[in-house]
Image (cartoon, rainbow, N blue to C red; front, side, top):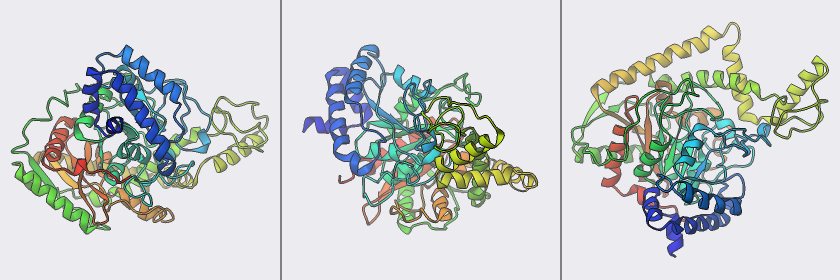
Length: 503
């Protein structure tokens, strides 16, 4: 019973326990391994079975190497689009099956430096294209709260692993809500930092001007700890900001009295009344904490979805052009240029132009799933001659207007509050054949990526069906300290973060 309780504890509780008794880290790992064996077959949060021997060795090495590490002996999982040296990194796509990264991402280096134990890879939507983790080439992840529901996406495997106590914390990536929406659906905390706050070196690119790595955790304190580990300037990432990283944890207890909470008028298409009611109650909780509410105007937010799917698909089309079966990853059988890829450089080299084009066509046709193909086609179209000005250039101009709206809003308020998702978790298969309805799942999260501002989702209610509901807080660039402080104050005043799925 005591060892089961370890897997259900928070990162900060376990960190303190392991400092007092390092053998607790070994007991924790065994409990997690047992839970994975019991539950991962139902949830499919992890893409591979854990290597028990290797993980036990990791624990021993990290306990010895990092006596004062912030994550000493703590098992953390990472989304399958973050590179770990020597390990398979597939982005949940067949086109990268067999590819093993030759280096660690910066965030992985920083996790290791603080003593983290790296668990198996978390499932995701293929190349992070999706809002439900149903687009994984290796099968969908299921929501721990109701296994007939999606966990959100594209970081659904990371969110499900944390919510089901199969990992103590996780890293995901957020391009249009891919950390925050799964956090909302799975009843945990998920944070997208300011663009440039966390290095993207070693993150497989989807849309390079929007992607950002961030934490998924059981509570706000854990999010503050994980962010403090991974944040900071990195010379290997040209978009990394040389901005000092505050001590997020020490500022959590600072009073929020007097903070101005901005309430924008939002598109209400598809907004569930239970989500709206939970958000209204959450705003009242902030008022009881001494915060002031005020109306703010985000005039261009109704254009965020259209703007995002122009810019994101254009960048995705450019980034995915590199997966062609030549240098690494999958090569289609029968292309006339060798056998199916092993993940490393391919041979023999193509001998004719026709054979080369045939290899490209057959490899990309069979290697990519439907959603990557859809986004490549859309992105190539908006970048094509005659359409660039009408679509991509106009999209970039509207993006600037969206950012200006947020800049103006944060002159009038300290935080903006809005729903994370328009509904609780929907059923598996409910939207998979209707891309437009699926895209609308991110209607409230996309604008933060377009503007580059930080945002966090925290639990704020349960639906009548017993499904989690998330609230999203946003603030000015590089004010993650303020964001976490407000989220922590709300969390301490409520008990939604203590609710657990009935696995």
